[in-house]
Image 1 (cartoon, rainbow, N blue to C red):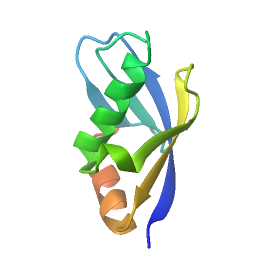
Image 2 (image 1 turned 30 degrees about the vertical axis):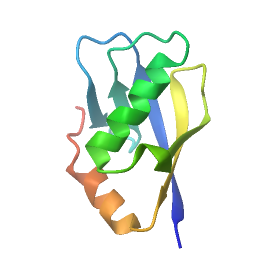
Image 3 (image 1 turned 90 degrees about the vertical axis):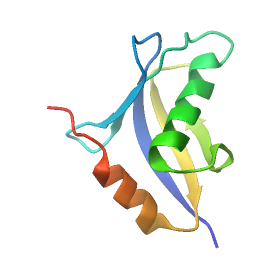
Length: 94
């Protein structure tokens, strides 16, 4: 039975390169190269999260913050321990 885990993400569109890092408060900082036009940055964010955390894109949805930089992301997973381990492996911002 899948478990839903919520992630807090601060997204930065139009970045020079894509990256995903943990912030000291436990939230995530995501940089995507796409502009925030027609949902392109949101789609790039979901792709980045899926790739970085070894998830399927269909398991990730934006619950809040579709039009802003601060987002609440819902991740549906049948293996929460694996997701938490992937989050722990992310580089932490200083």
